[in-house]
Image (cartoon, rainbow, N blue to C red; front, side):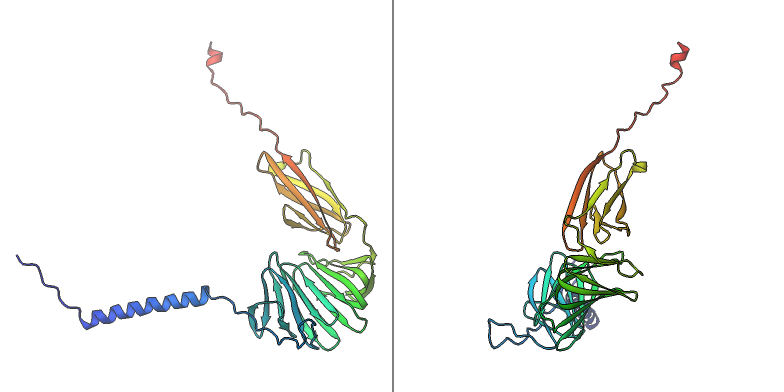
Length: 313
């Protein structure tokens, strides 16, 4: 019996194959466009005629120093930022984990830590208004008396009083603290204003006015009360005290600090030995840590009845 001869493909089969190939090619292109596309780099500002001297722009800040992954939102789009980029009103600077950014204009310098969003709200010749949208601590330096820098964070406002170096810290709980390293800063919240002078700090809890400025302690305060037999269901309560303006993390988790400086954290102890790491960072950026290994008591052996054979003997 002779083998069957192969029939040539009809025009309909050819059309179906071409259509399938076109669909697969289109899907591949769309996938690359949405998932593999890199964010464009932001266009660099015009270089200064004198390369060694940075010349300030009246309505712009310049990203002068970058470390790690820094982005900028400009003209409705996020860009990968590079040193030398110019930022205008309504632009946003974003730092990611482990990154830093320094903004400059005239005598004003603004340093951003990691995981922060800072928006340039209003810029004119001698005044700059910023909004801290996300993050914890921004440091500002104003070198001249005739320049004004305002930083808004949540419901608070901080403004330099003449030449000053100050920091604004925001905790996830909504607590805002201001410290002054040089000069003075005006701190406002809930209709109250205080002037934080060199070596002092003030804190405003959510919905409350700022506290009266007090000297920054020479040593950062952190004391921990470790549990002894407080391990109900494998959970230990870690109590302690820090400065009310400090931020406390227990095993990396943010722990709220009350107005009197006390804090309470619950740590699950599921292993025979569990290390607990307590870290406090004050509003000046200083850190102190305390570590301890918590041990679960050995489990009592379970006693099971062996039956009634013994009694029968």
